[in-house]
Image (cartoon, each protein chain N blue to C red):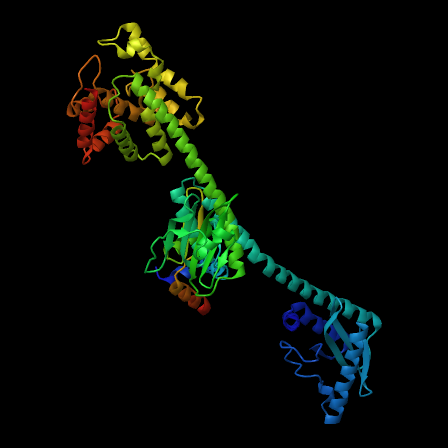
Length: 505
Length: 87
């Protein structure tokens, strides 16, 4: 380590422009002189090619004088080593010189030896030389320290930035089926491996259920359930610590308890997994487990919301006669229209919820109106027109269902502005409400009402078409017709209506 | 686009590839990589897109963030090393 530091120091000194200039400047001041730069073992370092060894041209007259000269230099350097300051010498009784130690802390790394001076320079000049050299050497040493610091810190900073990016990438979804493959792909990316599998714990059965695998190899491995305690993933879960072999690394996903395991196999460079890999994987698992837990919580909350929606819907079904269109068909048609109109996943979900609950406001109407055979009176019709507002006010307090409120509130608006409750026109009506308007009307037409007979599907479709641009948004009608023309949709509706007819009878 | 053309398209392209070869486990955004190689983010973004298209980098895109990492094909990595060495 130390010899490489010394080599590096002298290499940098040899390249340092200030150091080269120093020689030029002081040559003028001192008169022509020769200088050597040596390391502490008294070898001339690379980069100082003009000083092949410890001798100067003035001493090359004979072997004897050369050897004497080297002795003077060595003796001067030894004195510098001890005193850590400039030491003078006289070579062969006629030449003057001095050695300057290159010091850092307690260590002498080498010497600058100046010789063949006709007379010893004035002490002021020596001080200036000393101060200048000291500055240059210290600057080079600082540069080296800075580089060392950068070399140490940079990879850690890059790793930190990677962890931050990974965190952002995996926490941007709450959809578990999207999240797990993403975690697997990122594990492979970071660990430079070929295969990754994520297994989650089924605590009742004490097994690990494979949830996702990403395999870059040509021959893929089948997903297998693993007993807790068996193989690397099972052991990692059992002992709640990473299990590492030459070609695999299984890291547990630990929340309060172990919830699963990420196992990576086969580094692409064929090297074994290291302690460092284990550390990175542990950090990554800490990030992943938070994202997985969030997604699981979100899923639970969603199921809770859906449960609430289904409860309200079943109350609605028993209270309100005429909502006979099977929910599944209705939802499918709504979904197809939403897709056709390029709604986002969230908007589609909200639309689905709104489809189930669009007539929730009817719960607040007197039963006599809902069950009335024949045409409603003016007063009853006015009350009936209140149901979108009532539905919105029933659902408004439920925070997860807030998105559906505008759809429910405006699903009886008309495209030409003649609808209710607000008389909104055209695109001022929320898209979800425009879709609901079409599908809701279609549902009402093909459902058996107490005051009229059920229409056939084809007549209802014709009616929708006829009212495109007046009652309904033409874009939504086009998407609706497209959905109705899809293979199996009419058959599905007929089959389900027929089933309902039977059960009603 | 062949690998050599993609890597040597500009100094930024070369520096990005060098960065990923030095830090193969890194996954970072255009902003992050711009900071590491001290280049303007818009230039880096364009270069990253080029390198992803050429199969040198792998993109990890979600709605809010686009992360980039070095590809994991060992043959491609070997070729990249060779190209950088010849530069």
